[in-house]
Amino acid sequence: MTKYVIHGGKPLFGEIDISGAKNAAVAIIPAALLVDGSCRIENIPQISDVTLILNILQELGADVRTVNRTTVDVDCSHIRNARVPEELARKIRASYYLIGALLGRFGSAQVPPPGGCDFGGRPIDQHIKGFLAMGAEVDVRGGFIHARAEKGRMQGTHVYLDIVSVGATMNIMLAAVLAEGMTVIENAAKEPHIVDLANFLNSMGADIMGAGTDVIKIRGVERLSGGTYSIIPDQIEAGTYMAAVAAAGGEVLVKNVIPKHLECITAKLLEMGVTVEERDDAVLVRRDGKLTRTNVKTLPYPGFPTDMQPQIAAVLCLAEGTSVLTEGVWDNRYRYVDEFRRMGAQIQVDGKIAVIEGVDHLTGARIQACDLRAGAAMVIAGLAAQGVTEIGCIHHIERGYEDIVRKLSGVGADIRVVVTPDEEKQSQVG
Image (cartoon, rainbow, N blue to C red):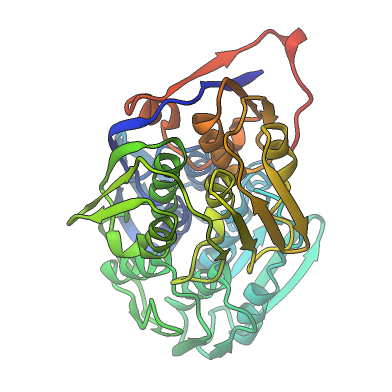
């Protein structure tokens, strides 16, 4: 069993460079299926989800060549297969982007239901609603989602999303770029990675307008050509390290970021007494006094991100007074609470609401990461805690954080990876 061992209670000082955005990369890489020719994708994060999606493309027949640690050339010109390998796809939530991309490229797709973190019901009904409106037949049989464009090519149409869905917005965009006519997505999500996907596609010859607003218009084109594109910095990785400084104390310059993307996170840290100074492409985060309580509700962008909810909870555990945390997106994102309680946190959960009574300190314990962002939150708690924290199931964390141990060690954290013999394995969760 591989685990993180953290000796907590050490403030953080120095600089951390942020990698490319996970949530952009896992959509942009499938989007290469739509490109007639080779595209070079830069600033790719070195995380297991990206490795999986690249492996899926290779299994389909794509030519994937590593240029350097953060750059790959992807050429999907010779792919003739629209059936995604089951074993790989079930390990990653973002495999559903292959449905839209394959429908756009071939007019058909056979993709297993997606995997990834389990936050309760995460249906793709809004994705399917969009595909149906664009003239596709969709059904599930033999363990695969089968989709086929009735006219051989997707058809432009109006799609109104019943809920603001990042995944559905991006998947319908992928299906629409080579469609016949104009597609309009109303009540679209506005997250930075949606804008990044649109910018990637436009740089390859697509005609997409309005990304970043609640109405996106996609005029179908005949083909996309190759080119070079650099992925935006990861908003959630940056926010995670900002939260780590807030919890553990110290002063860290978080580099290679777009400060505007972080404003929803910055605002809450400022309310808690953390100093955040914006630079051109960096933020300086400093905390040397006590943390004060605040209330947080997760919302679609530009609201506070659901992917930062567990991390801000770790900080609120150490704030003076009672904070209320409301999950406004997913149904079951508090599974980490029992692990926090092992460390001395005082949290009560009722449905989507968590009431957090701040404590003077957390105490190190043996805990298990139950999903990607909860795992990152446990790292934050361990950095701030007194004593030793051991975190198991770290494969969840490595799905979305590149070199987290190296980056934290570089700012003074006492964190290391430890491999224990089989007989010492703990029961794994998730």
